[in-house]
Length: 162
Image (cartoon, helix red, strand yellow):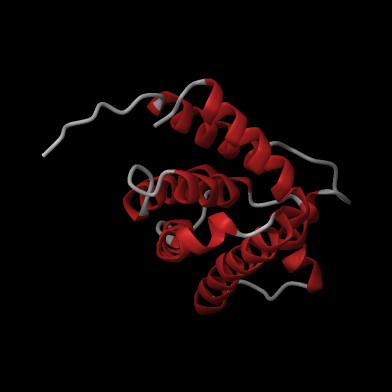
């Protein structure tokens, strides 16, 4: 067995911290429903780029931190993020070779699944149903995916995250 030393773990952690901060950053009222799911997008990127380092366990921990940050039911974000991490890892070899527009469509499906899990959990605990704007973060995240992908890829290359 060959032991390899991984580099740049702090970049992965810093990107998740930045995504969590963007998730709780106050936005003006009319813009707030369109806030993308930054944490889910960063998780999708790292599961695509380094599936051997970032996976379901990392997603579960990040999801629990998101539950604490957003004051939600403990485990709701963890469940959603773990599910999309599992699917991303299962399909990462296919998604990585897609052109950017097909990757964005894959991200749309993953983000919509994440939101569907959140909607399901909210329905179980009796939170009121939302309007069609509930799905806006998935669309916003899809539009911002090329920018997020490029930024995270450049960070990974610059700091040689392996």
